[in-house]
Image 1 (cartoon, rainbow, N blue to C red):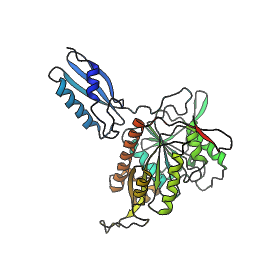
Image 2: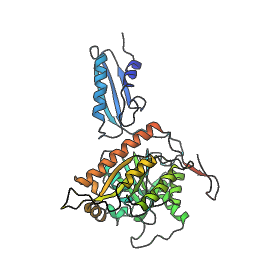
Image 3: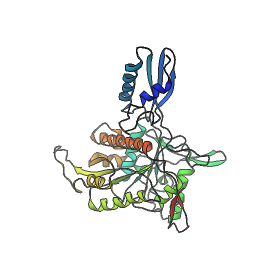
Image 4: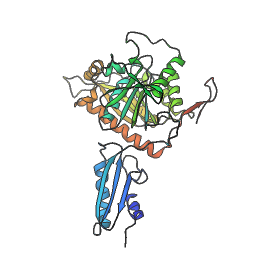
Length: 375
């Protein structure tokens, strides 16, 4: 009797993706199935070429298929890397080629938000994903310095009759910052609408092309820039950065609550605790909790959001941010910390896209901005 595709699909439904808790069929991972008299073959679609789960899931498929069909047919399970869009596309949608938009935010300044955003973006790019990074900290852009790009100026090209900015490329990712257009010594003295329009231009008037992830490094606090972002594009999720200090954590709560506001409704994917402890080089077994101990751990538990990781105070992280060599590119302990946080975030994105409906843009119902709604 000929084996039916539905029989193979039902078998694949028993194989669970550990990161999301859903089966590989529900996640849309089973592609290009072909069955004939001699062979069963299909591909498994993974988010990146370096997905750590790909080998174990492939092996699980092969074992189950061989147990049931190997005495009759040859089994072939292939692997491909391709991130599926997280939301349905419309003809006039902004950034139609961008699949996941990730906001990196903090309740207050000075907690290392831009350092975290930069290192996470590079870590994602190093897995083979197509990554973009926007420095939306309009009044204090620091990413050009962190990436050694202070003297760069983006080109302008003509695309379908419209002038478009071309992002600067480094570390396998596309980068754009307001810092590319102003003198580093000059203060950005703009009213809110001017800053908001600058962000819109960085997003909408740029030739981003096809991206799997676009990281947006937001200003500290909650401001016009945050509202402009969620009005302009559907944001996949937010990452909150804080130190363990009580003052920083109090502001971090405000940041979480802003994204969780019913009208904004952007999922918070996790919390990163920065400056968690200090370990002197001469005392590698000692930890000094300068800003308090595990405040971010407790806050993540209180707010019921994942703790993506803790970053210690390490001199090389500061030095790398100052001289344009981010910590994540090095094969040392700080680099491993950032890579581990990036992997935890990637898993949370998989869970979010599997279990939560796509985020909608926010619409201002009145000019005052006092009433918000999704559209």
